[in-house]
Length: 511
Image (cartoon, rainbow, N blue to C red; front, side, top):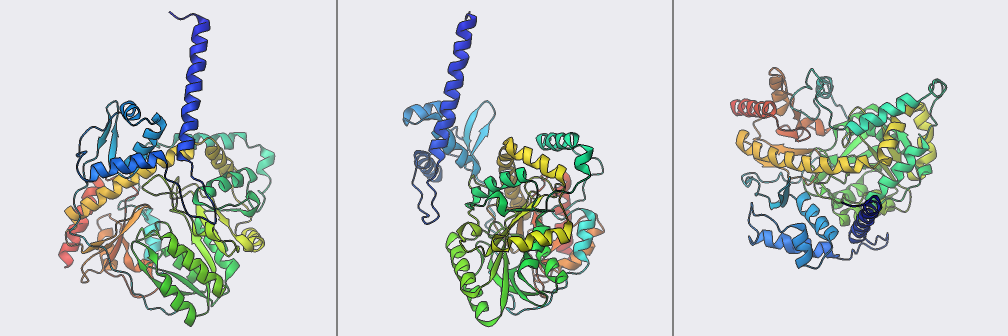
């Protein structure tokens, strides 16, 4: 038995070893970041990751085979345990290996082949400004609460796995005095939240001070402020096609014209198409989602971001960047924002917690650059102030580190659910002709035979309690009638699988 003194010494040694491992992990994961340089040094965990990836690719490590233990690999390769764990975590995020409780790491089985489905071709919208009319369908979808689900929410609350968030919000509400409830929050939002947000934006490469941020009532509110600050009624706004239906709603409400640009389901907006459009039309603003845009899940390459930013600077065009899906890559590292490359203040970065954390937590933000003073005034006009309680709770949640832990779980969950959806499409919707293969976000873009009108299918599906999102919602033109956006935001329960199977039967009956 240890004496009390020896036990205390042993505890101290364990703490020292723990902090040593944490420091090693930070050092092994550190990237030397410079705004003028995109080179990244290859570190030891990357070398190990590449070696193991190649062994899996050529079959040297077969599906289902147990990976070497962290201790064994650390000893054999003369690497720290934190280096091995980092390499394993990155391979797990890619879906190449999987951790099994109390058993170790194993090579993941390859996903069911979806080779029968090609990718949708680059879109070909008519490149000319048009007024916008969204229609009633979107209102019907929102009334059902099914914008990212085939089925309406259950009548009884389900277990909430994000208990830390609930506790933070509850504590914020309990601590608020009656005197605080009698006053509005400052227009820019709670300082402690803006400080936390400035740290989060650094994950995407953006260097923004708390004084340069404005808290909003969700991302849609941030996009509204950005459009109001950069345009006047009648102006032309360039936008992705297919693009976010909420953006088209805003253009309609503000009396703006939409100039839709061709997009790839892999790489997003075509810089060449933008260059051509800028030669012919007086574009005032460009709205886009470089990271995992809805509905396609496209992620823009860094070279395209730089080219688009250069074009916008040359023509004096403001860029409104919707980064709401940027925190949802299937891997460990999120893409850089387009905003992170901007040194002129012409990019207005907008986002919120609604897609990553909670739809009900209406806390968003905007980094408006040179439009800061305009946006502050418009915030007062459109919403006066934001909920101090929600801001305090969100700020505490970020400060505790709970958000990063939650994101790691959600990213892996969404990757699995996306893979499962692609398998279910092959099984239950064999008539589908093409499908996007996103590497992040919450949705994919499905192409059906041209004889299928998904707007008519929407009304037919509603009669059976199923809600779909027709392709026509993602444009101001008469296009995408035979497309669907399908989301993998929810687990594929038996009920949802049955709904997808029923949808497949409805489509088969219309062909």
